[in-house]
Length: 285
Image 1 (tube, helix red, strand yellow):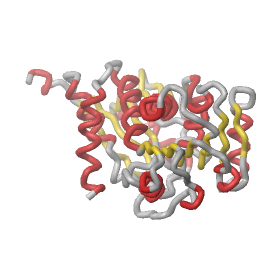
Image 2 (spheres, one colour):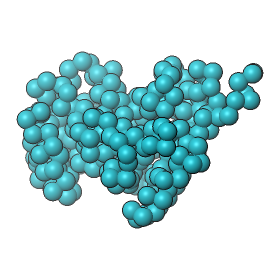
Image 3 (cartoon, one colour):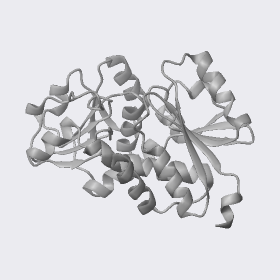
Image 4 (tube, one colour):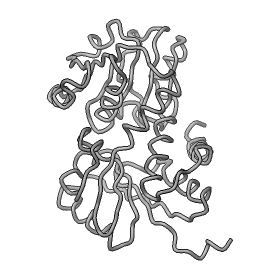
């Protein structure tokens, strides 16, 4: 193939721990599907302070990165280190996609767009509420903003750190029916939907962000975690007959949106879906 000689587009992921990430497989497959070559590098940096993070980001352009994704625990911490933020990233206060253009770093948030699309595909154009949202960190904030785009949907937000939840409520003040709850039990009282926006349930953790006794068959339950695909929360939800959405949908949709920002090309969803399933299959075994 002639395009094999072209220099590959260099992409990456900054975060930790990220060994199980499906992003390399998804982005490289998406590139191949549109006739490009991409190399997607995992940049696993545990416990980086702001100085180390700044050094890392300032090296992206000189090394030749077209863009990088950002994941836990740096989605919020990269904000002040970027040259520019999209309105969406500014609204969320978190970045999961950085586009490198002419030496400048532009922050975006495709968790928001990706989650909204995934949710409507799984549960229809107007998901039933109230929705209990667990977690007000990087992913939780993106989900809160995504949910705020559904008119009249009541969101009840819980975080182990109530100040974080209050900050998200302030951020969305006037844009959404968002209520901060102190306890998960309170958030789930009469709730129709549940979203886990925390890393609880991500391997090696086998915990659940929601006590199983609070789940009901009529609910829909979504998880942002995809390693494992079937977290303890989703396994129990499915067992009692609730409708479920795994982290697969969010992972694929945020990656599709990020790839479009990185390359200016729309990748076919099926290419990313196949790549995700291949990458994650060993984890499910």
